[in-house]
Image (tube, rainbow, N blue to C red; front, side):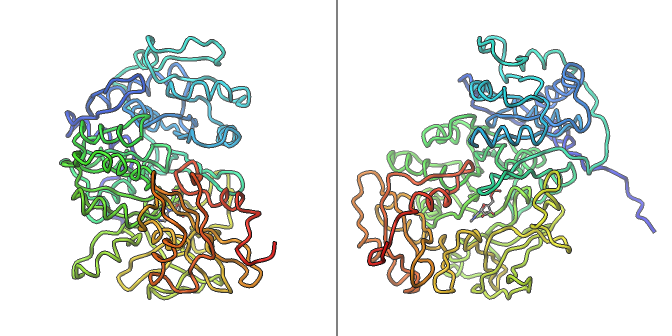
Length: 544
Ligand code: AMP
């Protein structure tokens, strides 16, 4: 017997409709690319998103299933495109401008993007690339006529505001099935070509709801949310959905993500909740350290993920600024949130910090397990490392165009490529990417743990541990350090700091000091590039 409840397809534009109808005057404050702060609200955003959808249908000929790219920072205009085009049944493909140009050309062609909406910032980049993009019909420049660039080499340049002005703000969204695709995001892929993850309306609505829950991000209409994480990095970690569906205000930081600019937005927007990768928070904390009179009076909590959050960052927020930190883990393939470290009841204060540093528990709608190489499930004892596998309605079941099938098994588990432990509380801890784990004498050393402990050493700005070939142990750890400005910390001091905090055989064989550590397009340490840089390095006492 079927239930007698209404058939109400889960479509993402209903999220904006809800925000517009019931939180219509709630603010969206953005730093514009042109310069000044821009203020709007959900009611206005909804009218403009509908106008854009109508103009895109009429003037650009967009229909259900069309793939349209954006290369843009977080702003009100990017949100209008996001909702307007998804509402039309088109697929919004967010491009990460930090990718290499070859990768960008590859994914734009692979996705068969028809048009590209671009911020002024990226006009030169796309101009240089356009000859390699034969299918792209034209570029919509996200500005008004007064700021349109004068250059003439671009194919079919259209002014965003002029296009939008031609649309109907009362446009009625078409209706379609909730499993229709609406978003496309490519993984940064450290090896091989990037692979596309194709989100559906249903998966995004469910994931948005999941992320707003109390023990995920606990969003509400009392929050002012700043997604520092770009809309092009894994679906804004759901915030472009979960903030409006909660009625939370939005603060969009635009192009400037340095410490002083972020501080300004936190202050102007009275931001209560923000989310970003650790490197971004390091820049903010460095700015705060230089200006001890600055406080964070509005910022109640931050979500940190994308790479392991070092203890030093967490302690700085919690102990100096009274801002709570929620450590989160996820992947583009998971929409992206997979777990968060929220405090369970019944845990003593002394026990809490070690758990808080882990990546946490999966919310409802994410299932996870760790297995050995043969696929046997491993125990939740907090010590046994295994391959981390996940399932859920917002987890990919395939990559775009059927690629990367090896990552999905017959029972529907997706192998994340991460290595993790799960403890008795159910708290998962990432110990490594499977390709970054350091294999010494048949045992595994967690590069992430070495880095986190090294980061707590006075004078260390950034740390990376990589495994390099060793004649006896097959691999041994090399610790690569960037010193804080003006700091003199030595290798001996770092060894002394690590001593007693790790097993003896985990002790790095050497410490190398560098001026900077390379990062990937999504802000992670590029171990691949580091291994390449240190290819000819030999540990002291080993033959070349
Ligand atoms: P992306 O799809 O670009 O978001 O990258 C996903 C990968 O980032 C994961 O598979 C992890 O290797 C890594 N990652 C994300 N969050 C964390 C975290 N909190 N700690 C450690 N690694 C993380």
